[in-house]
Image 1: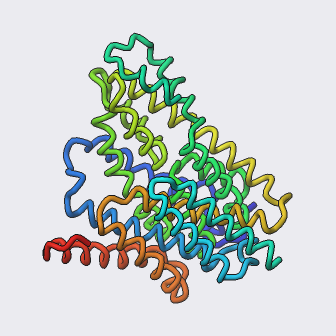
Image 2: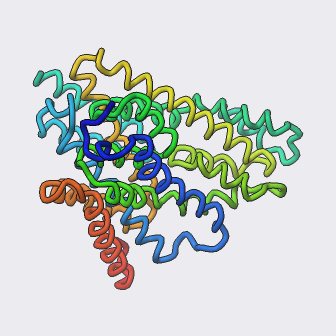
Length: 117
Length: 251
């Protein structure tokens, strides 16, 4: 079915989803439940681990905006990056209300998408 | 629902677990749940653009039940990453679920809670349910907490899996500009919610470094970009914050 992309080419897609997606995710939850009494949340190793996880996800955010697929790729780069910047700045001003950051970013993106389409 | 929370404080609530389960379910009508639903609309569109079928997309959404993991899988498909790189990147992206679970379990646990109850409930721990539960559970009777969390978590997972499928199916009927808006939901939601969930300076540094290193490494090698951005950006962020802590500085 979706055999266009390489990870799915040699794999059954569902096997790939379970082995590369579900198990590497769920194992942390199971370990967290089992070891909930034994590791301090502010230990150095966990601070590092959370920093790595955070950097990875924010790299993904940037890549989804800078190298997008589909309809988002038709919107000029400057609009996409501005929308992310405006949304983030709006969130920082209304700290604690992520909805305003999302709406502001979407407003800039949609305005730009309609203007350039 | 907010008014009900006041009544929840009573120490000896005689309501059975099933009532607490449905009280949890009612919290689907809340702003955090609404934001999460919007972002699953975005995810359905994203997965479609990446070439996943509707069934693959729904299985991916519910079996990981963590949007960053699901999006990393989609990103791996787009970057044509090999299996080991995809699995490793997913594991790194979701490692924060362990400290999240460890911090909520003592709050969720009741006097008669068994380990397998907690392991089962842990499958529904994700950023939205975690933030929501950490704010509300401490005011509730111990017996009420686990069923309340499950009511909220399980119904969120079911509703959002359906939403993902509907979004995947309907997205082609939309004008291009609106599709672009849906695809943009995932990155903007991640950026603000991740900043919201950050607690220590190392995480703020990691956000900034990841945003810069991600595209830079993608240009060099799309297959391993996420992996190295995470490891290198995260380690630098950790070292900067550690150096500043040693010096007694704040950030």
